[in-house]
Figure (cartoon, rainbow, N blue to C red):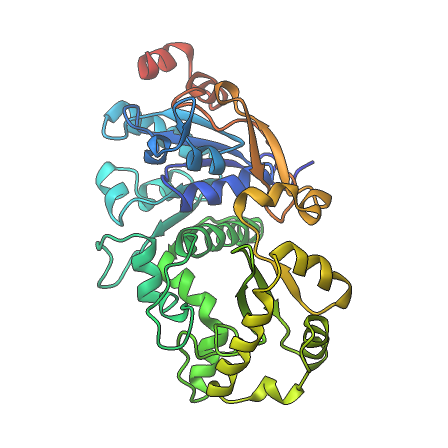
Length: 383
């Protein structure tokens, strides 16, 4: 039995944060139904590249779900959604604050119909405050959160754009999932649901906990100046002869000694606390050595030395790496018309519902029937 068997989730969200959250819940066994606009559905369906008319990002974050197409601007559809919510455990939404109230299905209405309901509202800046109606995207959120300022190739360089959507996936999706699970547990004790206010900006800022601790101690943390973001030669990324890269994380003295011995450089533990100008010299010395061999040659040569050097894998190399193969990090999902889909699992384990991401409205009749709608009601709603 999966952890969330019997939990019903209605997902009104779009794009990445909410769908990633509800995929986590589906992986844990929850029954997740995407409630989508009949005309356009989840916007991310149309993003290229595509398989069978569905975007790769959509296919990646919507496994294990079903789709019901309802236009909440229509009175009949709104009333139908209220009936669904009265029987659901969780509603996830990512509209701008106030939009659901305008549609007549806001928190006050839903909680009155179902006091045990947990509703998770994901937004850029929160359900209250001066930015409540402000638009934004991931880059705006991590900029305002201070996360963007912390990444650069070296001291004094401009902030570097991260390769993934930190605020969407971590700030919204992961914190949202954590909050939903806690609220479901709390409901078992109190019998009452909750409205969860998840700000993606705040979720990203929370990831700065360690650096903000340094700030509180009088430091001025910024990009390229901290131990773990570029100031130390022992902790960084280096180019190899084949224009691929390795990551070096030899922070502790024993690993720094082992690393230098392995690459043929005289070890000096005092280098770990050397001032910035010396760190730059050390970095240049190491870079000159590592650029003489290919990435995989260095990985093979240093594998037995326990010195914290690992390859920087490109995405297409991940499925074939022996660690990820041994840990079965990739699962195959039946994509229907899209064919077999290779998905990465979450650290929580294999998905409990490895079913294909749904086509728009594909499961409407079944969902409504399971929620107690009569055949004539289903026909009136869906045609």
